[in-house]
Image (cartoon, rainbow, N blue to C red; front, side, top):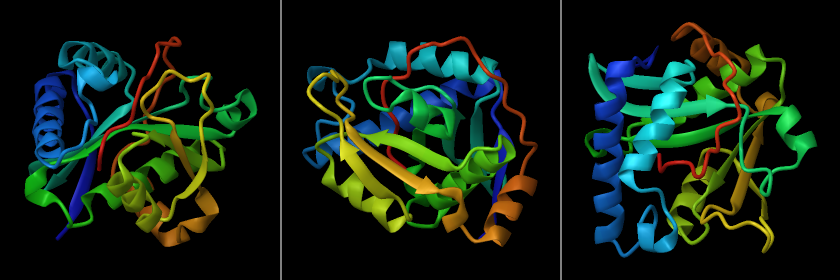
Length: 204
């Protein structure tokens, strides 16, 4: 199976929202409170606003399998400063909204998107791919560990985010050939945006 990555277009917003709703329903059926508004998750309307800004900024990507959308990721240099320090943010790119369509779960789509994030990070001259995961979702934490990330820490009590499990991976830990494939899978176009708040990453 070949996964192709392309820059997301503005008309992909509905697709990304559908993926988020699909995964949120899957999580709720398994007893997880991830993304529930009761647990301080984003409403779908606010999620759509934030993703629309990321689409406008060229920060969002779509994975396709045989031309069929299979997942999405947003990568930029912004995060809640109550989570990562200024020094950490200066040497990293941050993953948000990693979501894989359930039809393609377990087929490496999420890892391919994370490798693409590493290629973007290297292209920006930075060294770390970082993300904040839903604090109580231990299955999600295990996913990122299997993908080569390690838990840097759980953010302190000052953070009001429901995603306080902070994971990171150094770009040198990816095989160089994998990052080259990621770099050539799509144009590494990404423009900086104004400092809009990003609240939580998605489940890949």
